[in-house]
Amino acid sequence: MTYARVLGTGSFLPERIVTNADLALTVDTSDEWIVSRTGIRERRVAGVGETTCDLAERAARQALDASGCLASEIDLVIVATTTPDRVFPGTACLLQERLGIHGPAAFDVQAVCTGFVYALAIAEKFIRAGGTKRALVVGAETMSRIVDWNDRSTCVLFGDGAGAVVVGASDEPGILSSHLHADGAYKDLLTVPAGISERGAATGHITMRGNEVFRMAVTTLDALVAETLAAHDLKQTDIRWLVPHQANIRIIAATAKRLGMAMDQVIVTVDRHGNTSAASIPLAFDSGVRDGRIQRGDVVLMEAFGGGLTWGSVLLRY
Image (cartoon, rainbow, N blue to C red; front, side):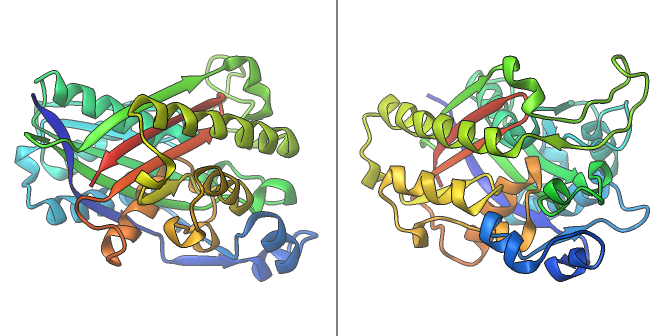
């Protein structure tokens, strides 16, 4: 039996930090208002000319170094992103070229905040099927490019960044299962109402019906956690670490409560990163690995909820 195992992790954040106090200079908000509702204190914003692929490349190189793999050993590249550099080619192809990888499949996955979970699940299935031995999976975003900086309900939420993992074939179980879902009936709750075909333009800003999204996220993630545990006949206490999508500290706390986990078993970066969409889980995962909290052998639950609506989980033994 061939399994897929995380071999190394990496991440990268733009240099520029935008604090809540900075935002309060331009929109009607305050640090107290933002922190009490979201848990966010600051976020990173890409510089002029700094692209999603730039962030992805830095995170990918770090993950390759951590894994001990050469770029030439990678035979699949998947980039999860909502903010690609171009309409086409995909950001995965741009990243592939920068890393000097020639020939293997490379493609983007667009599932917004659940994108990295989708991408990691796809890579695991390629490896389990025998078609891939080493996969590079990246979540990278420049969400600041699609934020309306005059809309206080959304501009306080989002940030830019990238996280990456190298996943390889293994005789020992690594990724245990994935559970992916979507329901387009709720497409208008969280969306960018612009596009090439529908609106004739490639740009637009994020719109969100925040209270409805919050309620859907809490309810849906609760069911997702139950589904994931049941698939392996696991108890809540079998999970060592929760690595959730970093959207809102209240949603994160609700999921931890469902698992009966203390918050010190949850990797939280939302206070420093904001919501980085597809980048948030790999950024948080790399943070937990690099500071020594997540150790080899630990059972980790990743879960996310995003526009689409999409939601999903990956259960793995690191």
